[in-house]
Amino acid sequence: IAPPAQDLQEIVVTAEKRESTVQKTPISMTVLSGADLQANGTSDLVSLAQEVPGLSFKSSGPGQTELEMRGLTSTGGESPTVGFYLDETALTPPAMAQNGKVVIDPNLFDLARVEILRGPQGTLYGSGSMGGTIKLVTNQPDTKNFSASVEGIGSGTDGGGFNHTENAMLNIPLAQDLAALRLVVT
Image (cartoon, rainbow, N blue to C red; front, top):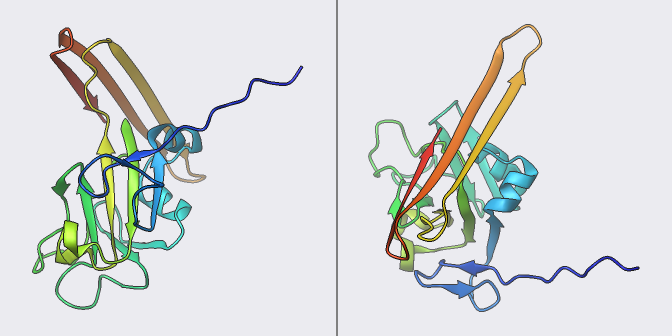
């Protein structure tokens, strides 16, 4: 008996500020779903950059990560070259930021998907996206179902200490099909 066939699902993206599928969007992009991130154990920006072709980084610790795409480094010039967004909010620092062109190092727990858009994206995402844009798309509150999830990450270093991260999500429908509250804590 053959195992049941798994249907391929269309990947819906918002790279052009409206919903579309990857096949219909004329942009060079890589999209990783939240389920893929969790299955691969990808929990931070550094791990994500290691999985995506053409995306590199330099990091001096948490909150001190510089992103690079298409050979454009963010150390030259006065503004960053890779846009970084959480949903529709730019997290890219201003041109004359005190820390340089670094971005926050977010936890990738409870995301719907990550969209990595290569090449100049200045038309839709501004001048700080000359090399490309990284867009983290969060899961929206579910107005129909109560849900919760918990994640724990631990690691140890020989001769060092124990490192740990705990994540939790709680989704509470407030009014059936009208409103819900989604809390995510790290």
